[in-house]
Length: 222
Image (cartoon, rainbow, N blue to C red; front, side, top):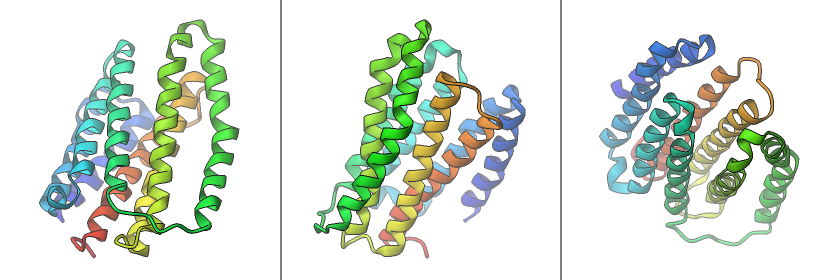
């Protein structure tokens, strides 16, 4: 558990550094926090039961590093996180679903949120000349993260997951989605008060929730 404790400590420092825009400190705390989470995942046996999720953490770390660099590396960071979400999608869909009409409720809720929030982001891209070229990559990214969220929510309908792990991992996926949405809104629409703090806060809790759910589903924690 020492690695998890270190992740929490470094994560809190990173939240403060993000909020205060202490860039030099973030060069250390941003990648280190995810490295510690990655180590914890491995030490708990995560690679033996969910290596797609471990791979997702690797690409997330790469995305963190790219986004720390100059803005010209934004596409590289976007691509790294896109790959991370694809890894999570594959990981979630390793086990079969048991159909339920409640699935339609989940889809309706996600669809409503997507319909309200994401067209504004795409509209912001199209209105600004310097961002127009990002319309297709960002649209593809949005579709991918929405599919990732749906895949996580559908863990409720995967018998081998169990209720508690499904709730934890779905909550994590939702927080990850919120983090990405806040990042996009702050970048392409208008600055959000305490936006950097909120992005990293939801991002870290999201990643922790996703992999904790995986470990719980396989009886490796709790």
